[in-house]
Length: 255
Image (cartoon, rainbow, N blue to C red):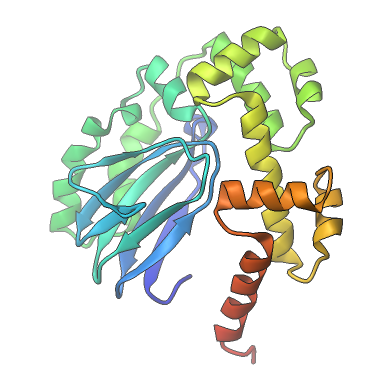
């Protein structure tokens, strides 16, 4: 947790968890910024008070629809800002729109804003207000289920051709479905999740050799990893590792 921002987050359960990856609530203690990693997905941000900017563009009430995250994005905030959001899984928002689920339309969330602003706003209060929407039954849709299967394989780093083979409809149809609902191709999504894997390994082992990291994550060579990392996360692996180590030195010593 950052010293200038308190971020509360929960991963929903039940049927909605197939479409929504997180509900989050943030309150700042001073001006600052944070980076949202690329995940090939989108979401809504609802500013409650203070100033909030997304990639240096100030957000205006009542909500902001994040573009599909093919690169990391910067969120800046003023002192005492308060904002929350709903983060969908890749294609999750498009699927829920197809199913006409109310959480896919931010206008259904807006009546909650006044209640939150008048109360002690936090994640618990937000979840209580969202509970009826989150627990609504979701109808079965075979085309969506098949596309979800492919997306789940990609996110879990199943090789792309193997992922196609494990999904019970044709490759071309799957490619069209993913492009339509996700906004990017399966290959592009696989690139994002491969570099996310590299980033996670760096977090776990900051001193790992970059050439070995490239090999472990399936890149042709070190240069390929560095190019992909910088393209998607807008920072090189070396600078990211330096940032990780700097953050560690600011943490209090364990007792």
